[in-house]
Image (cartoon, rainbow, N blue to C red):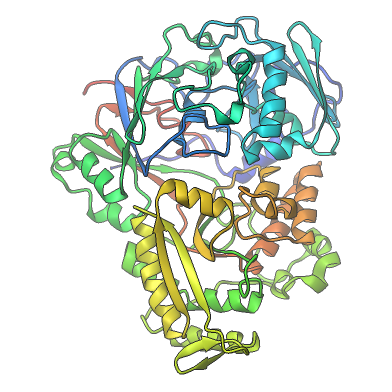
Length: 605
């Protein structure tokens, strides 16, 4: 097993401090942009720091997905789409360097220009930029893409479009976007919208195209073959327009990427053990330690690599839908948190090897600090103190058990919280004042073996408290439909968070998103304090104010008891074919789709 360190980077804090240096005061075309200060890479950079510009091209890589798919349009809400598709087959005006908290460099655009207040942003397209069918990328394509995605596209694109005052051509290859909101991040987000071909959809409904009508992109890969629900094959475009760009040197090295689909994780793992899949990401430390002794691993044909990172933990666990009573009562949510016997579940599932997520931003400089809020964090929270849990200002830690299956202390605490919320146990059943038994449904996707095992243990604890629990397993499309319509009580939840959180926070837990069907605010939280902290983050002009706003947001989210967190993924674990290789220098973000398979290559041992 190989374990990789960061020899050139001391900490994410140092990087963030560097990125928050003074900004340019005069608008001028530049090769890149950072959230704060100047981008780290110079205009004449040779390649991304974590790519090998001399990596050989060729070979084939096969990855596996659980579930199925019935659409190849990743830009609309309708249908189940292979999640990798929008990363492999489509490009934006700018591309991200994953070795900086948030910095972009020219991709379809050769330059970016924005004033100090970032009230507008202007891009100049590369003359050589082409779609995969050879057609040039035009300003008209850019404007159409922004308008279409912002009006009929997937909900993740709608929030940005609502903050656009105007979008207009300012020259044959230049387009300017003016914003109606004070938000420093919008100029960067504008550079990350996917660009599609307007001509492909003339006379057609963008959101209703068939499975056979794959949107045309500009990226190095194109869909070359597929069978609905079974596999998708992407082939490297030999005529890709950007082969000579420094941003692309050493990336997209495989000739073919195939995505196979499996009914559940166990079947997919068996396929990997048989050599039918090139790599798997392992999220369970116990399985990593004990299950990788099959013949191909013993012979050295499968290699285990651990990939460190400096990202916040994000949040992973069970989300509680506060749109539904009694989950709208924080006392009930707190009781459910106490019933969840993490220490016993963690020991059972991972051998106790994985530490628990302690807050939404834990494991980073952005995380809330122990004890009472102080300084700028306390100032930001003070106007909302009357409506926040006391722990938001006084300090908060998750409930802990003694690790035994009974969890008696926390169950007693949970019972007291339920009684305070108007419930009591009658004939072994938890009932409200009207005699109605509390019944909860936990919704999971078929094949989600890990969360099924977790919730099987959790259900027994809930039933011990007199709560009736149903675990419902549905297929992928039905799961997406139900969670998109917020038709659940409890379901599994994962939100990754970057070192430079921004507008996506509104999508995750902003008040407006709570009422927008298909949004990522599955918990349904509507909190003026959360909205205010996000605004503070987006308008901060100093490192201190940005970090304080994020730590304050972390306090409000964590003390709201919206998600029952499980373990953190403090290190990436990738098991892969021995002929797959990656550069020695790693990005601060560690593993991700732009790293694997983005900068890997095939070379026979």
